[in-house]
Amino acid sequence: QKEVEQNSGPLSVPEGAIASLNCTYSDRVSQSFFWYRQYSGKSPELIMSIYSNGDKEDGRFTAQLNKASQYVSLLIRDSQPSDSATYLCAVKNQGGKLIFGQGTELSVKP
Amino acid sequence: GAVVSQHPSWVICKSGTSVKIECRSLDFQATTMFWYRQFPKQSLMLMATSNEGSKATYEQGVEKDKFLINHASLTLSTLTVTSAHPEDSSFYICSAQGTSGGRGTDTQYFGPGTRLTVL
Image (cartoon, rainbow over all chains, first blue to last red; front, side, top):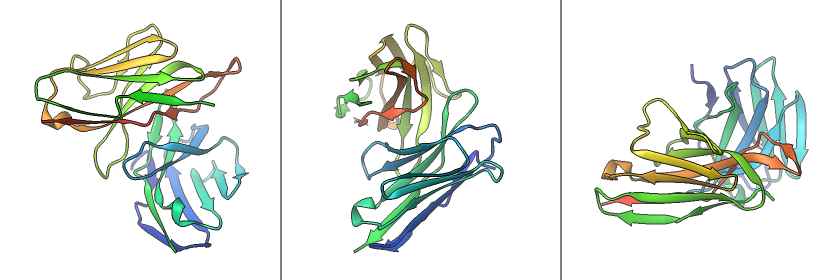
């Protein structure tokens, strides 16, 4: 089992829809979770971090964390074509390293 | 805030030469810097972790004599790819984690990356 798993996609949604990106992790003691966005040919940029169970909202983005289920998700409301990118879920392990999922490619169609 | 720069953004070199990549935190002190490598269509692979003033810790399978890392100050880390070969061609990305307003943070901020092509 991979430490951090994401569906590779591609996930295709129409403009204006909600995009839902999911991630599961295997290390039960993980406490820090991150979502990064990576455009083709660019480096990752931080979207959100989340540490507590529940929802955390920032503009059109909402991160959701459920530690009991070892599940973290990212919702993008009112998706725009500019949101088309690969979204990386990252979990910090006990050694302080970020463990990345393989990323989910999102395509928002106009 | 939390800006990380890398230089150069791209480099093309001949096989057998060495290439140095710089990573700088511009507006915060980076107590820890990380070096990643990313091949096309793959996720980031951590190469090594460096703390200011101490030796880097390399991930399994990464040759420390080939990928020399120096973290001489709280704002600068360098990665030198020695005797580069075509298989070293990749996208090298650094990230930095440190303090902000006197408080530690556990968020990694990424540099823009350096695309290395070895002919």
